[in-house]
Image (cartoon, rainbow, N blue to C red):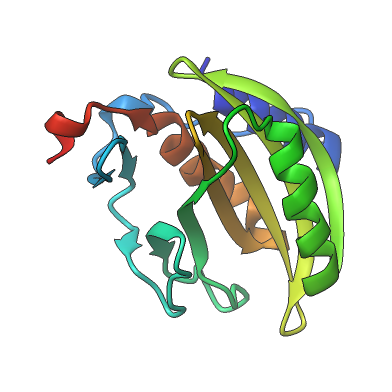
Length: 191
């Protein structure tokens, strides 16, 4: 079973008391579309499910390099699920914990009802990820955000997956597939 899918199943079991989750079969074989990004000295790629689209209702922040959304799902889903990748230059030898501590300080100051639900480590595709599951409120809508950060050289790569809190169980299948597809690639192959 895939590392991230197991991780999501564990988180959801802990948060909702569920003993079992639906498993998405054959993540690699699912149709979708790739997203690649390359800078002068870094490159990565990931794959999005076919129901997702690049872009969304909101504008990307200056340090976001990819933003993808899934349209609302039904009458009670008031929020587009989002997946984004943010890249920040950091000091050499910065640890993931330091990056998250700084990021968390700003989040607590700026976001209404911010709460850290869980956090830890996981490894996928040879990448060590520091993760956290948080919740906060945007325009009276409670959201959950699953965030992963990997430090490579002098950059932090932050993957964020955001959805309406009561849609998290359903969205986790897509979030898992997207996160599992993330890979660093060679700069020349990405161009």
